[in-house]
Image (cartoon, rainbow over all chains, first blue to last red; front, side, top):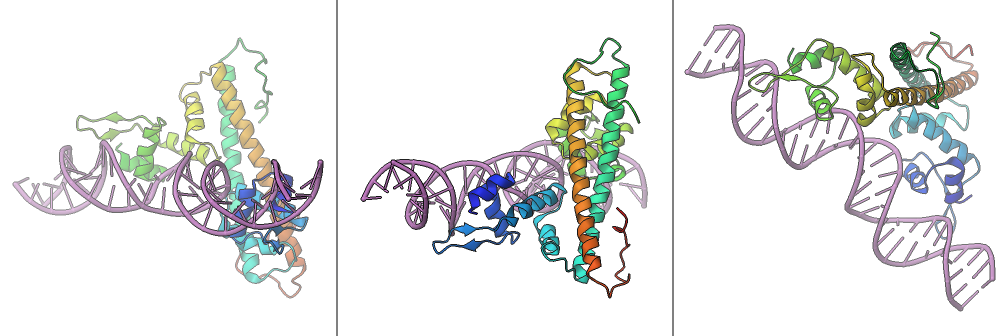
Length: 130
Length: 130
DNA sequence: CTAGGACCTACCGTTGACGTCAGGGTCAAG
DNA sequence: CTTGACCCTGACGTCAACGGTAGGTCCTAG
């Protein structure tokens, strides 16, 4: 596949893919004329990169754990990094959960003070049970 | 309290507090000489601001939902915003959970391919049960 | 063979949440 | 009254993950 199709399939911009290559996160074959050519797995790789970015990891960290994919071979250092990042993600999960619960509490408290409202704003109505 | 103490208690920089004020997130009384003076609740407010930032919200979004605290009164618009942000946080939680699980899977797969390793790297040994 | 859409490199611009430096007041202690 | 820690207001610097533009090449269809 060429870069445009990978971008479309992965839901990212062409610019982003070139940036990933610049960071060493994504390698591409080159045609004689210099155009990038990717194998189909590149799409999944990009999706995973995005997931790691979304988890708050930077390019350096992503670069550190990406080689763990592809083949299932882990050096001691890679294993360390994976555990470290997993724990970081878990910590972020805990924080986020607390924040969500706090938002729910505020929503519940607010609803308690609005006796005239039933349920017609368009959103759902969670934040009711623990 | 003066700005330095609030910063210390909340674990943020003095600069950050002045930035929050600049963004309208944190108001302060001023002494005759212009020095900021905060009530004790400011610390909790700052901690909540940090939590929202950590949840991926920007200053604008934080500014939109901060007034919901303090008094428990919600206008329809505030209620909408709270639900929207709560859902955003929840979506991020789901993504993060998936990412964590994927990391766990990679760790497990890697450990399966390292038969000579027992447990001596220094980290803990999670990622073993679902 | 020509139009035009996709691709290339190179480089500057942007946004958010601050860091940091310059230059100067404030205030409790000695 | 002077020191030294703390505070003030600008205003520019930073870093990451791209966005956008300029100027030129490639390739597939008609």
